[in-house]
Length: 249
Image (cartoon, rainbow, N blue to C red):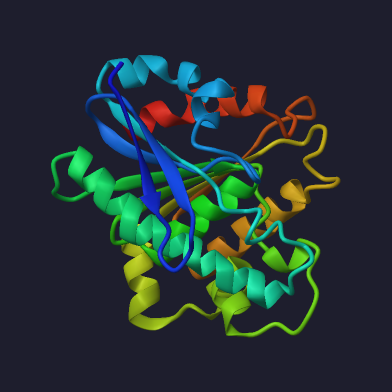
């Protein structure tokens, strides 16, 4: 399996974050880790092995990225609106550094990205695709909660939080932009009914509520709820990714 990696500077921040490529050909999949996770987690937590036949066959190339959650959404001592503004810095890193590197690695042209993530990574995957459906036409969110104001929120909320919160701005989508999203974007939401999917993560109710918002706006989506044995944990995300990804690549 071909592999490459890079450390890319975060715009407006001292950090360099890592992106790792797995594979030689196929549709690019931008993989976000769980809360506070790293680019190594996709391989280290078994997700790469779960889809290895697709990677080896040249159907998909994985680009796994570091998180910046410790400075953004997980910085609970920082007011929510400031955390949201900091999230914008991470979004800019994906947009201005990671996406061009993926384009370079794949030979240019239309990217047609899949974004993917479990837990907090599900939020990142869905939020990025909603913002950049011109390059990311499928978002796969596993065991996600899509409302940042439910994550130890405090302080006054302003525009930064609004535009970083899909549960806030999706209801207001309308007109030409909504029609364009309907024509471009597909969202796959997967969640279980087992341990930790309700408490403390809020993933099950959050996923169902967000699916209802997408339905109200006519945005193409699927909701796949697994059973009471399906936990908020890596072994289940491995199974779910292996189950769903083949039909998209």
